[in-house]
Amino acid sequence: MTIQWFPGHMAKAKREVQEKLKFIDIVFELVDARIPTSSRNPMIDEILVNKPRIMLLNKADMADEEITQQWIAFFQKRHIKALAIDSQAGTGVKQIVAAAKEMLKPKFEKMVAKGIKNPRAMRALIVGIPNVGKSTLINRLAGKHIAKTGDKPGVTKAQQWIKVGKEMELLDTPGILWPKFEDEEVGLKLATTGAIKDTILNLQDVAVYALNFLKQHYPDRLKERYSLTEIPEDIAALFDEIGRRRGCLMSGGLVDYDKVAELVLREIRTEKLGRLSFEKPNE
Ligand code: G4P
Image (cartoon, rainbow, N blue to C red):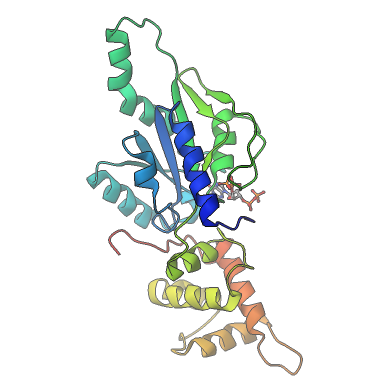
């Protein structure tokens, strides 16, 4: 992600989404299943107001299955329809059209009652923060490759409707919104999962956050991956142990903390430590 979100960009992004909403029956709000709160736009409820919406927990293939189910139940309790999907492999994607149809049934029944014999297809828009998988999902639903617009509000191309079966049309340009940067932990979670570039935050800070999280929530995975009998209390000692075991050393044999940070984050993002979720409901 190259975008720097300045206030002007945010206002423009919000306006662009609001413009698109005029033509839309339903919004698919894409979030990262590993961090469903941190990967949301902080103003999303205000932006979407009363639009019918389905929450899509994308990258569910990388998230802790049990926690994803807890999230779905959490949203359901709040009368928000949520689905777990993997846009890359296509798992769960078929359910999206069916769920949208169900949600929009009253609206389309009204059209029929008014005498419209062949109601038009449902019109949908995908919105989400950069890197959450919007383009991947659009391609999946379209069944073909659609050129991606830059992750910059204002970088536009002519919008087109893509047919998704007979019953749905999807806008080929998604709504791109910003995450909640001002919260430091949100930034660390976005960086840990790879949603924001490694040059934005200090890599060691991100790895310290990630390792502390694993220590607390997935200690056995941490032990197994790095062959630790015990996890050291002190985070620097944990960096040392991992560094020595994995050969992340500088000349002279001292542990290279940058290399350790890079290794740990790469292994988290490539599921070497298994499926991980960094947020639970009600935390
Ligand atoms: P965006 O339009 O919202 O910015 O996101 P995009 O579709 O470009 O997806 C960002 C990255 O996330 C891509 O990986 C994409 O393959 C990956 N991705 C999207 N959906 C899923 C999913 O459900 N599961 C998994 N595991 N990955 C997903 P990338 O490394 O940036 O690119 P590439 O390796 O696919 O080329």
